Length: 270
Image 1: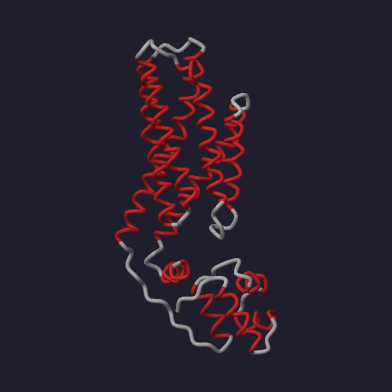
Image 2: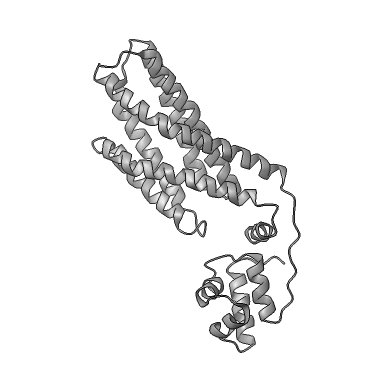
């Protein structure tokens, strides 16, 4: 049975009314609460298969349990990249604070260990790239063209600016402070673009992507302004924690491909 929300909710509502039942009377027949039935009928949530089965049986309709489908190779690859993205993001989350403190010390002329600074920069380049690419693979599983473009923009911006940073450490032709404000403005725009991309998600994990998107836009604006960049680290931290949380959610969602419930959900989203 391939019924999508909100069509599923409308179908249940029509069957209930055809039986002459109120939502309260249906509750007594299937042991669900009124709020759950209201949200299902309005299309706010996609119920699990056993919930749908209980509703159909209470309404005197046949229900066929969906077959368990094996996880596809593409889904397996997506999960692998999501794990890599989460691992990279977790390491980057801590490395980035070392990078920021080292950048400030370097521009103030009190940091002399070029090798350590370069190693941290290289580590940030690798882990942040993994993080962003994991999010890109997430947009393949849960389509969002705007976010996908924004993530590619961020991936390229990070590669370009980190390469310039590494070059500045090995040459006396230019210094980090010569272009630092331009770099901040670029990343501010990129984070704002990513935030707007997350806002494009609808009916995905409640309203969490919208909260993440709002944090991305706020942090992007503050970083772009340069003067508010330091305070922008607060919403930026929450933004990146939200992205890590979304990766965990996506891993769990795709990882349940072999279960009856997730098979039904996949059908609803197909």
